[in-house]
Image: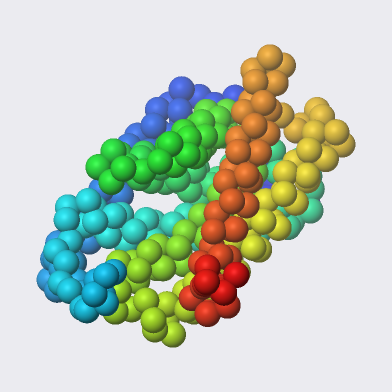
Length: 287
């Protein structure tokens, strides 16, 4: 194995100073996320569609002008901020995954830690806190809160122990699906864009990334992680204490099952919506 990889291998404990640094980084990224939100609000206020938009009336089919309320504006800015932040997370997570998981030795999947992997996990936790803090204002459903709680618990475990960063990065690749998702949500907020080729291409990118990352890649990763625990049990753990490690495994596989279930359900909705945009969905009268 190359010496450049070995230099990143660490022991099984984290110094309290490192834990404090992770907390500070998470708070900093939370504030940065809100900074991106406010920057979006400032720039978007110069766009006419940010304040009002036109859409066909459901009864008369005539075009009407609708003023965008503050909840819709919060959603607008959150989609823009989250899109850029998710792109940053995906880039950093991909770097760690390509550096470690594709490099060779299985032990590195548990012992590798770097500034990139630490910052990416802290960024993920900070963005999750930011998004969750907007949910009470826009009325998100319970499953969105549950999803972010699980993200925070898992990111926190990797950061607290300093172990398993490549696995945290691998699971964090799901943020790649948020890039086309945020673009689709942004374009849906402007009805005039919903019939454009760009909207259809964004929907296609969303469907494809969901299929490759959430539907195919994530189950493969969970199976590989389970295989590590049986093939290299002396290394494949997060907590040295067996009870704490068992609790973490319950959290990991339990949250994995929840997230996979949500992903498959959302993939069904995305597929249904994509087919509708392409004109393949039959109306109720034709069924």
